Image (cartoon, rainbow, N blue to C red; front, top):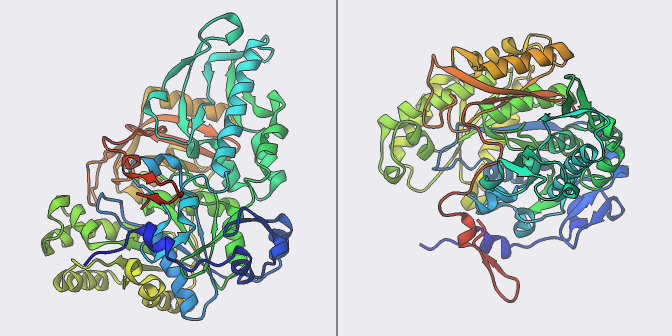
Length: 558
């Protein structure tokens, strides 16, 4: 049987004008700022008015440690929102915006899949409404002003060897990780070493996602630290007097975007930080709006529960007051077998032993979510090659763990394929009230907070700081900037800092190479060994399989 591609399915969908989608969540056409027929930004007046609405329930979708086999977290999130509507519960899905880096690199698209997609998928996967471009420009305005300040006399006495602000680009480009700028004549600027990150790792992305409104955004931008003086004092964006200009560039980007799923369920897509190198959650504004305009809001956090979900709870929930009512942990039998040691080429073969071994990864994630006080339902993204024996074994393992399991067929059936999951979540939420417990006290030392994450979430022994990292911690303590949540930048593929260690290892150390402050965002970024904040392209980029014809029809996005 030949299956339609994601883009073929999306192109055949009955898409509604965006004002009709808005009506489903109580918004009028006057509440929208249109970007064509099928996407729009939601006005501040509408956002403000929604604050008086009753809160719906919030479902946090996360996953096991990702594998090359794929888990389908976004697909399940979209299918689940569709399913809630099918069982008579008004639902909205709140997702992140795709970055062009992974779209052209390994993912080839990030708008769900099959019959559980957000549309128009070509627009969403490409430039969308320009939010990430605005973030890129705002970030690089700061860089330009730093270098201009130095060129024009450096009144602030910025230490050229201690500029912490990097340039960004929304593309995977390893050649830009370490560069030298200001080459040429004197008029071409001061020569110094500089670095590029991917745009979604910018602190501007973080502050946009964590700000409650435009005024809060400007205040957060003003207190971003971009460098240190030769005397060791921090230099803030407010010292450069450009917080207003930077905020101005983001005046539209801070408004959430409204689109729809294939079944015309409203989808609010806004913000896109990665969960391995950033905090991995969509914007607070978007999530709160989803809660205020639905009975059941569905949102996701990036990568596994050790990264995205931990940061959602310890960073986003602290900042916003948002509290999820339940969590969904997404897995596939194929991915669990990979965690059990099976090669990707052999996943079609039944392997009960590997499934049982790989289940330990799922078990760890369930236990971690329970530590936060969340009811958990396991969603198995089902494939045709999953055998009856494998399904039976997985159901028994989940039963022994005391966690409900739901078999989902959201790729093939859309919302219909997640109705069982939706019903089980409704039942669980009615039966068990979530009581969110944060993992650590923000007033603890940086080392204690970090060790808490390593021991209680990763299953390791301790965090081992390099000499440079210890020096950076000491500096933050001296500045009084240590009483903030921790955002760990770590490989998504393992509980350890080694991407090749699969399953659920124990008794390992995590090496910390860098500790830096994101003062505007309000958290401390801790980088482990081998983490790249500017990813590279694979040997065969997804871009090689993409094309557009003379009528504007796109192929190769998936």
